Amino acid sequence: MIERPLDLDAVEAFVRIAELESFTRAAEAMRTTQAAVSLKLKRLEAKLGCRLVERTPRSVQLSARGEAFLERARELLEVHDRALAEFAGARQRLTIGISDHVAGPELPALIARMNAQDPQLLIEIRIGSSGDLLQSFDRRELDTVIVRLHAGRNDGKILAEEKFGWFAAPGWQHRAGEPLPLATMAAPCGVRAMAGQLLDAAGVPWTEIFVGGGVAAVAAAVMAGLGVAALAPRMLPFGAVDVGRKLGLPDLPRLPVLLHSRVKHGRPRDALAALSAAYRSAVRG
Image (cartoon, rainbow, N blue to C red; front, side, top):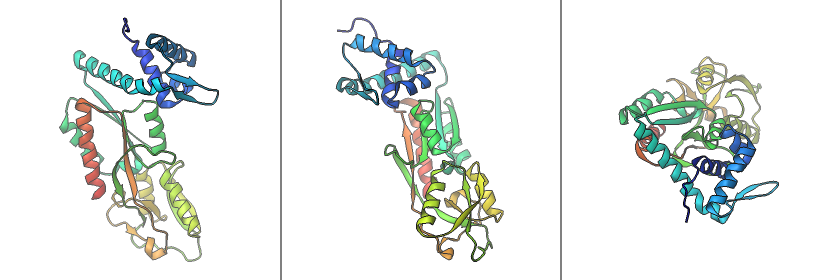
């Protein structure tokens, strides 16, 4: 029987180690040192009377007891944070990361829908690349991310699958014999990588004519007549033309929009459910 309560900082350290599979990354996420994280874990293991993490020179893995304790540890932290916020009368915060390839022109309406669901909820939204947002999610800097499918990840819940096409401005003409001028987002954009791979596999010569820091910039370059971009139709102004079939370009797959979230309870969960439903509607048109 455990006579004294668990140290919540130690429990958090264990959860970070488990999720990030690294003492170093756990220390970075907690803004402390690796030695401090190791000490917290040792104290927790001593308190529970069992080894939670198996350490090897190349990897960090949970023991069988660690696997069993992980979900309980997450629940303990969630209940603590929720109780503290409600008792203190503080506004609960929900931090959401949304991929620039997902955010779209509907974002203001979707934020309004979340606010209508719970006006007292403090909503923080960050826009970025899917890869960067997933890294922030893994470091527990974000509660939820809504992103495109990312290489090397097979987790997340599919909200919807979205059609993509090769879009150009009305009246734009490709000069015969020249490489296809492509407007893209900067690396490591997954859509950029996919478009290049498909063009290479189809034997279509191409060159980057414009690199934008966001989808809005790429769409502006397309409508300015600079070239072609692989984008979802809802990301472009009215009048953009899908020129894929005309130019004999390879078909683009439908790309999933995925939800990664640790939110399971209370008002944040309800607001997130409203946002998820709205995105399903927006993506499906």
